[in-house]
Amino acid sequence: MSLGMQDSSGFHRLRIHEVAPRDGLQIEPVFVPTDRKIDLIDRLSLTGLAKIEVTSFVSPTAIPSLADAEIVMRQIRRVDGVVYAALVPNVRGCHRALACGVDELNLVMSASEGHSRANLRMTPRQSLLAFEDIVDVTAGTGVRINASISTAFGCPFDGAVPVETVLGLVDRIAQLGIGGVTLCDTTGVANPRQVGVLCAAVLLRYPQLNVTVHFHDTRGLGLANALAALEVGIERFDASLGGLGGCPFAPGASGNVCTEDLVHMFEAMGLNTGVDLDRLLAVAGDLPALVGHAVPGQVLRAGKADRRHATLATVDR
Amino acid sequence: MSLGMQDSSGFHRLRIHEVAPRDGLQIEPVFVPTDRKIDLIDRLSLTGLAKIEVTSFVSPTAIPSLADAEIVMRQIRRVDGVVYAALVPNVRGCHRALACGVDELNLVMSASEGHSRANLRMTPRQSLLAFEDIVDVTAGTGVRINASISTAFGCPFDGAVPVETVLGLVDRIAQLGIGGVTLCDTTGVANPRQVGVLCAAVLLRYPQLNVTVHFHDTRGLGLANALAALEVGIERFDASLGGLGGCPFAPGASGNVCTEDLVHMFEAMGLNTGVDLDRLLAVAGDLPALVGHAVPGQVLRAGKADRRHATLATVDR
Image (cartoon, rainbow over all chains, first blue to last red):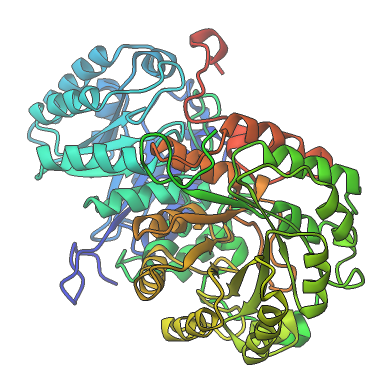
């Protein structure tokens, strides 16, 4: 299994970041038992994913479904080459995460005032100040930081978000010394042209920054937007196994891009994700039993594109 | 409403072809009353669609749900600039269609032997011979012909379909004087790279041919494939209102690309389809009542990307 940025033929490997354990499970109404979370992550670790967002060090009162963050983070079996990340909302969460030895902290802010207030109860400016505190706390620990910018492609409250606004936030984030930025289409409003423009602008301005995209399939555009991002040079993609999850505080927001559908598209195109799709599909296939309901992933239902059927006899209606 | 190939600013108009009345309704288990079919098509005619596949002149025994082909074709209110097409499986169907004054005949064949035998009960070679007969019958009538090539991107029985095979079929079709070809991804196995390659090859070889693409969303790739086709110069797209329909004889085949989701993507990208999306969504919104079940279209549920929500109060869980 290739776990470096280049495969044996020298081609770049696309990096797939799995967010289901955090972004998916956080909104499940039924608590998924801790040992089953750990088992899910351990199985995901063996599929060739580049990064797994394991959990969130938020207040257990705010998100009871992830109240077992410490135990999960400590008990998973880490695989070399996989980055184990966790969402951290503030300095308190940062200390908890550092105590568990996370590889990467994922900080979250919104590009728009409306979503920022509704989702985070603070302004984007306050978020940036909180980022600064977290950067200070992590100084010298060697722990990586990524900053996710929600509503980077538009906000369900404020409407359009100008490219300049997002670039301004990326400027501030880069100035803080944060090495990675995720551009999030939190409510699935992005379109491929816009994706190409914003991603190209960010890559052009910060060639050294690790830029990830995070799309939602709310309006069916998840994979089309991923394709548009790929075409301008994006190599890092968030996705959620089975298409689990979404943003609980944004109306109409549902459906993270499905990891196995995204990997299926890239691999069918002859691109290298490093992911063993069959193994990933096996894990995805157990998701409905884990969460107690069907999941939106389509390849799981239809089979891979190269799936063959017996002829004639079985087809006749 | 712009109904020509160019809008007022001189930009090309993408041509959206609605197939729900034929491709969608043909597999509905409950017969949709004739007057409601006519009403559906009449409403679609006012949305700015470039073409509507109205019905199919197949044997009423084979497809009872379209047994009212003549009445529907004769009683719809035609709008200038909209092409009214019908599927025609053979010379007999051709005579029936011509008697009703269709604008365009849509002939269907498969690129692969396995699907051809299963779906049409003949070989691709026999299909081409049948096309020849139909071309002879229509000579001098002024009626346009389009040939749809099923499984052009792969077959659920035979597997991969080489580009050369499809190009060979397009050669034969063009030699017959047929002016339009539709490349169909009948079971949703195409990927964006493959779409770009095949579409570019056909456009390069036949710049004068009207090339349409017909995608299925079986593996979530419908819009991504449409985007890939667009990028190499395709301007004609089949789609089905609400995502209704699919191919009844191909296992795992479901979900034509949804018309309103496709139009939503193109219009969000600043492209001109000539379609009034709000009007189209209004028609799509009545589909569940018409067919008696939910339809897969996503924009219908989520609202357009520019949909705005009230802030704070309504969001807080």
